[in-house]
Image: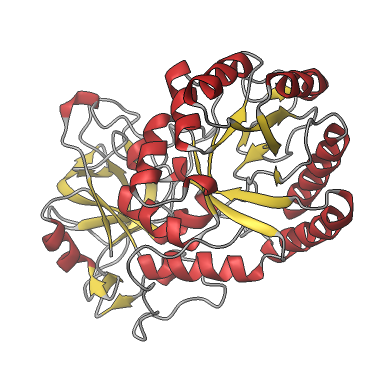
Amino acid sequence: MTTQTPLGATPPAAPTSAPRQADHRARPSSFPRVNGQVHIGGQPLQRLAARVGSTPFYALDRTCLHQHVAGLRARLPAGVLLHYAMKANPMPALVGLMAGWVDGIDVASAGELQVALDAGAAPAHISFAGPGKREAELRQAVAAGVLLNIESEREVPLLAAAQQQLGLPARVAVRVNPPFELKGSGMRMGGGGRPFGVDAERVPALLAEIGRQGLAFEGFHLYAGSQNLNAAALVEAQRACFDLALTLAASAPAPVRSLNVGGGWGVPYFPGEQPLDEAAVIAGLANLAQRAATELPGAALVVELGRYLVAEAGIYVARVLDRKVSRGQVFLVTDGGLHQHLAASGNFGQVFRRNYPVALARDAAAGEALETVSVVGPLCTPLDRLADSVDLPPAQPGDLVVVFQSGAYGASASPQDFLGHPHCAQVLV
């Protein structure tokens, strides 16, 4: 598969005024402070806030995004394709950029499929996964010509009917629930009983039925877990996925053309976490690509990443509404909160609540000492907390609070209608 043509515009060049780290990751230090102000996209955050017109909002730095995606694609071995899992951030403008920068887009609903198609992604390079696809969604996928990841025996006759009615091939891969899990994952997607995929021991029978129904079989999809910073665990899981797919291929009704070994590459959010050893994971993929050339000839390996591509290029910005002192504790009450950034509040899968990187958009004034504060939102629940006991310069109403590492699982993964507060804006800069 070849890379899609970028949509409309040439990717922006890196600005000379905002140095990036050597590995092109967009960590907090990649948003430079100039004259005491956080900058993004070459402009101070206060100016961007005025341009957006309201707070809170999410902002993504397109230069950070492009440098990271292009750099990763250049480092991946030949024969390994990079897909963007748009559930991490389905912002249409972002999907439009990604469609021109990666080898494929992975969607998880008919709604996401429509966004990807509207953004210009080629149907041949779109895959559709999800454990509970409606019959209408299966039909839409066949009509669009995208690759459908089968996650249940129920889907096979429905796809066969859609194929016959539409006179179009139903392109399918089988999502396999492996008999192992990805150790150290934030969320485990394989091993044991799972709603995702078909248990590996039942796949041979499913493959036989796919052949009998005449569906256009193309390969396998395996995803053992997400948000993992352990390179050795990722390498082992990818190897195990490859070996399992190789065994199952013997029962396939057609040669394997695509093997999606999932993603799960994590990003550091919390104190003490170290970045993923990307080079080690890529070395493991290089070994699998060499094996695929002889053991699965003609098959492309696919790496499906969402969070790893976009999380560190985004920030969430809220404005301080009030500064309250309660029994010696300082609370900065902002206009943003868990309804717009559920993950940063600790209510999106964290077992023990920990703070995302948080800062004021301005430096401390001369003579100001840092103070310990908690940053909370406007909601009537104690869960509405963006940062707990962090050291910041003394803040006043009107100051901007920045939550870093916010490019993934932000607005779309948050209950924005909760308590009726306004939705937040999202911008690319």
